[in-house]
Length: 223
DNA sequence: AGAGGGCCATAAGC
DNA sequence: AGCTTATGGCCCTC
Image 1 (tube, rainbow, N blue to C red):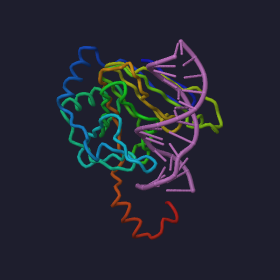
Image 2: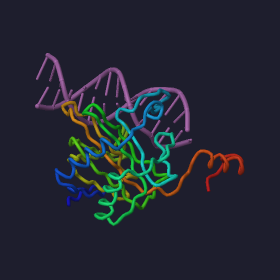
Image 3: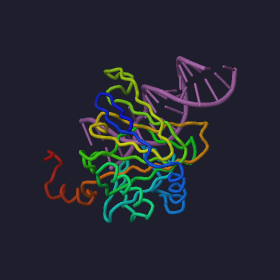
């Protein structure tokens, strides 16, 4: 195990699967997984619609949802390989997970911009467990107070490489203080699949919020 | 010196 | 009201 620490950042990194195991899991996932297409594969940023620069899917316990950039999506039922990996992660962490977000990067041009994982529907005390399969990719953390030209503090980004078959546990409060991204790497031509296992607290959807809003009137105060 | 990469601005909408 | 998150452009390094 390798400990990755900085102010407000606490991660554990380890090789979870051998190359042979990881090769096998990657191939099975390539056969089993179905990714979002069409409108479900788009995102709105500053009023413009873009295709997300990767493929994405959500799997998990029945009825759970995941909100990404304002769009709520239902979990597909677990596949056998996802269950196997989930159980391996539970054996090594002692934590249970009811949801996984899958991101597939077909090459080094596919990427993910800087973000934090949406805390509203996540159990804030549950770590996020990330399993990487396929091409190794760089992974970068940046502290929230060190972003932007007018940022108050100078803090170095924390960078690591996520290897084939590796496991990264992001412990609280990492996700509160640190943004993370998977930057473009033009020299990489092979695909990578990343699984982030989470525990979703409850299913908050727009209609539920609308009911509360209608019943209690103006959104004057939050309780 | 051309390519890669880091980081910032964006000013719309949930 | 404040945060989002992809893109393009600018700038730096090798």
